[in-house]
Length: 151
Image 1 (cartoon, rainbow, N blue to C red):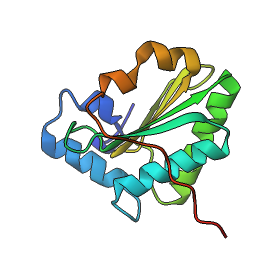
Image 2 (image 1 turned 180 degrees about the vertical axis):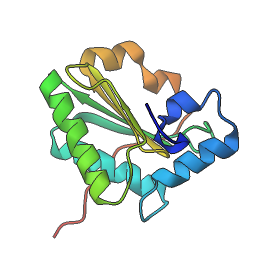
Image 3 (image 1 turned 90 degrees about the vertical axis):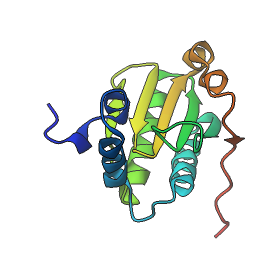
Image 4 (image 1 turned 90 degrees about the horizontal axis):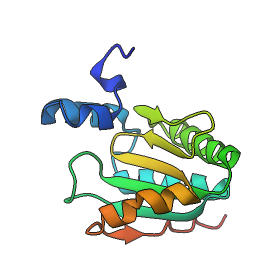
């Protein structure tokens, strides 16, 4: 059981918490940079490193109050989905971001990682088409992750 509001997944808090509580949870989850676009890009690159497919960033700023970005990733096997989620979590943790909540671990075909301003959805390809978050957020600007700078 969570001990403090900052330990609740924002998706659970969003419908019943006042805006000030939601804002405090989002602020507490941020790393050294509060630029959510950079956080989303970092998550997307981590997913690509684990062979995630069809990585897409949905910019929810100005469209939704619960997150700034959704990062959508597709995998083909449950084990790959777990590897992608683990890779994203590790990369963001090392960058100083705190995981606020997670859903769907252990053989699920849809994993969710909530980092406050950035929510990462790792889908099996069938679930991604079925739930169609791209269609749900059709009015949100979309972007593909940028390539990391060459060393």
